[in-house]
Length: 190
Image (cartoon, rainbow, N blue to C red):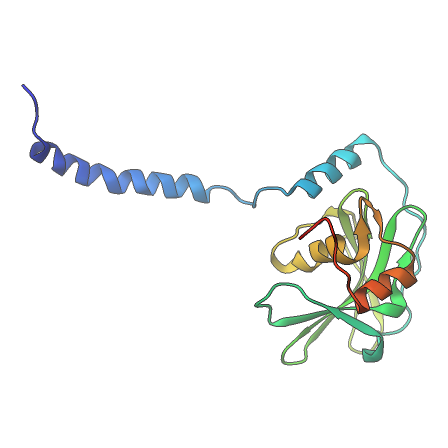
């Protein structure tokens, strides 16, 4: 004897919401977005061997507004992102160091001295700037993979469009500053 659809319909009505909830739970269990290809290759490169970072000096002055080069980030961002052009350094070990200035529409500023290791797709926070122009060394200053989403999305944009190309610094500090002021875009990302 075959059950008719009308007899099965009540059971389906109960099972359908449970199936939908199970599907939602499975989809939301991922804690992080899928790793992007640059990040994957950089982590593979970093796993091959450790490198020794060259010495660095902390900034001694606060960035001046006239020296800031802003760059676009997310279309709906309420923050303005800029790099202090006088702070850009490129080292022989493939690290680009810079002072980042993030400003809200209300005028609040977050100033940080950061480094980007182009060959490993990593970034490091060295220090944060205070309103009085002094600097405080970061507590957990270590190299971490760039997360090109969320509050650090600007670092992914800096890596891709302004500081690095093919796992190496884009050029000398003067060339990087020129690209920040007058971007030509990365031909690999259209």
